[in-house]
Image (cartoon, rainbow, N blue to C red; front, side, top):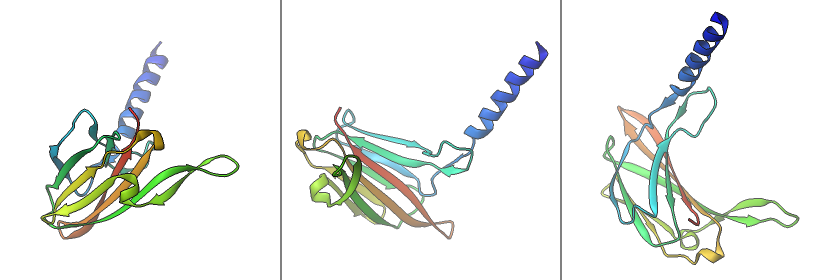
Length: 159
């Protein structure tokens, strides 16, 4: 009985140590506006499930309806961004792949305002044409004198 109880304690302790391996993203963002909270959601978590330390990332999920979300970096007054867009396609012979796309194709338009506000707009899309559209923002800036970056993932799906 004592061995089972001890095993349970060791297992709980091990799980708690693994779950502590998430570090806050170097660049922190706050939502300052969301035009459609039912169809545009923002989550913040670490995508790495292993025992290796990982940084939390932002995950925006939106439907194919038009809408907009604005996020302000609260710990860096001047950021730069790099964006990429993709859509899934079916490969000849089967399988899936992501193909590079433009913001016009995905309907995800990203602009940087006042040096630290991200404006992410979603154009209305005919959802029958797509089963998913994706975007990614890498935000760069200086925090505490160090060059840092944070990833913001964007997905558009059917709901």
